[in-house]
Image 1: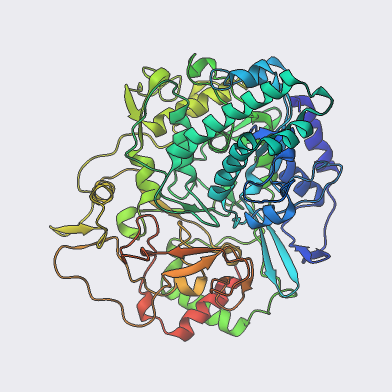
Image 2: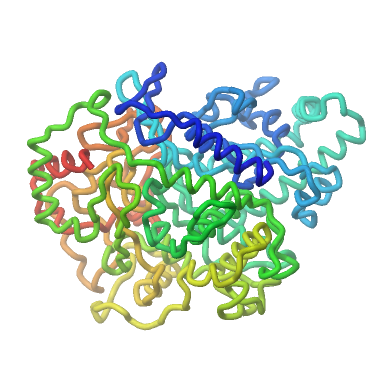
Length: 636
């Protein structure tokens, strides 16, 4: 869509906004909560491209599942497969003619500017396939949830998905490989894609293009390979983004010591524009409001969103040219601005007492007193559900103080790559330190993002990007009061992971921390903690049985009483309104992934899956007090 067309669409959608009555509005079994959005807002949010390009649209519609034996096999985008992967089907309409799932969107550029990454995809560029419609993802794919209770599904916009992104990538690659290997399957695929253009030559060209995609996706898979499974509701997004930047350096063997093995729960994204720090570890800052295309936007949000698109299938060329002149990319800057503006009008969801069991307000009042007595507001500042302007006043807590799993922040801090064409450039393109031969990949990411935005918006100047990402290298000195002899990751035998944890827990840096934010709408955001290691709010108020740091010598005594569960299923959208979270028992419908804090065979804690942290005297709470606190959290 052109810039003018995108702006006109935004104006039309805003102009057509109609007031909605309070409470949920149900259509059949699906009920959408009143979060301040109209149907037009949702249509825009679910379907606007950010510049992500996963596969050509015709390919995606023709692709069959690899593990389905029938001929023809089940379509990859069948409703059953979409739900199996945890994404949300969306009916075919005028706004969604191909019936793509929520957040799966079409990106189309018919100009020569679409001919990107031709060194990687020469056959695809030769066939002008880059100028055809592609399917990618936008933010709604990972930040839209459905909660099932009774015979209803509650649609919650901005809430974390329970999708299995890792399985999506693996299954998609398997389907592409099966399409090339099985000639009958390839024949069906070619007939569907090429239609009247089917010839011997066009079939051969199509197969060459498929092979290019397979080679590229295998490279991504190898770089993102990790010993820990993500499962439903988690993704090592920062690891994937940094690895994608690393792979844009062509012809270079990159280091392999830092893996994408720190899966994180998708954060809920209402009130995002009101936060100074973005992402679990505050890697990006919202710092400066500017006017672009007649719309006020935060440059930090724009750069953060461009980072996300680069990690999730955007085409970008960083192997030639300089960031200050702009990198060619498929990132849609104008659309990112419009999506961010739409998100700024999203309210947090209120507990729907007409669809879920009513709140016990007497119990909630007792929970409110406990919340105050335990000092919870010192980190989780209050913010009303309909307050879309006040600063969120989120708090960043150093890794040592929160004592939760370190590796989301740690991996981002330690990730290094050979710089290639980035070498010698300034981190912020126009200013900042120069990037060395082997660099922190986060600095290369900043350079790539600035270049991709400058490549789309010539009016931007370099000073707008300074301090969007926390700078500095950190001080490799003990920054906190630790015992003389410390066992990092007690029970873990992987020496490399223990050393990485030690380095991150004894270094002071802005991104070696995790964020605490207001808790409005927290009831709709399970699983909990940054890595999704706790299934319900009730379980979060229990102590953990693992630790990430302990004095060397005699093991610390285990907490008394019940502990947070260390094995539970994930994937079911069936809601537990008592403990508040998705059902995680073995019988939960759709609970296809088993989350484990410890290895099933050895009992060793799994780095990345620790459920420790956020314990401020949990063991001293009675069960009645825990339930009172849970009841209060429902009201936020």
